[in-house]
Length: 369
Image (cartoon, rainbow, N blue to C red):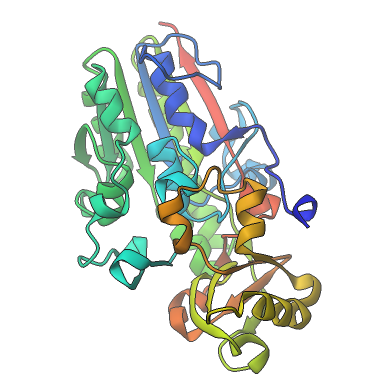
């Protein structure tokens, strides 16, 4: 039933953050849903993998972050990097920008796309051809700069949903702060800063591990140095693409007939699976998975997902990218598969709709002098 589907735990979406910034910097047609005022510079630091729940639980290790406040915000479902960055960079929900999972079927190219390891056979502009918010801001006279590792400059994900403006390669905290200061030499300016380490460490060692806490401390250092370096009339926004949960119950979906009967392709990731079924088998497959998983996952047929609004308005041409059946794991369950053996083996996971995965920070700091 649609009424039983999850709902975002906050009114502000990750898709609202860049449009709000654009509006605050004077771009016509954009709407500021955050209440940013009228700064001359906006710096948006996106910390991969930092959910609001994790920040609250481990606040003692991040005093700079813990001292900040802002509106409650949520990412989208699936709560995973390519989908969330798609919404962040375009200002649209997944049903419009078309990146619908950690991996998903692309009918026009007859293949599975893994956006974090983009196939050159699928041109980024063909997957997501609409203008990004970065492009729109640049065209309106706002100086837009991305400050992130050099390796991401020409990645498929960057070219699909984060293209536009200038790119400053920066590998450490010092280089990122320098990049932000250089980008803020023009008025008005929007600078996007990306930090990936916390997500990588959380996947491998788990949220709350000693290595994760050390990584969180480095995030705190980055934010502290950024806020102290901001020029006058600047606003710093700290947000994230998703949170994370440690998964201690792993269920293989590769071999048991309850999971394989009627299935043509499996994609997504352990917390959010897209299942592409044989013709006419969607209801059968959904029922088999429901019976096998019980209350350990929510099993949704495509039409129900479309009607729920979780993906926003879904463009007709993009519907078949979505699985015939979508399975969102609950609690600490991971639905593992040999199709993504390395990812399935990780401790920390995300993609589903628990608050630990879905709630993200939207912390705001403004300088007046």
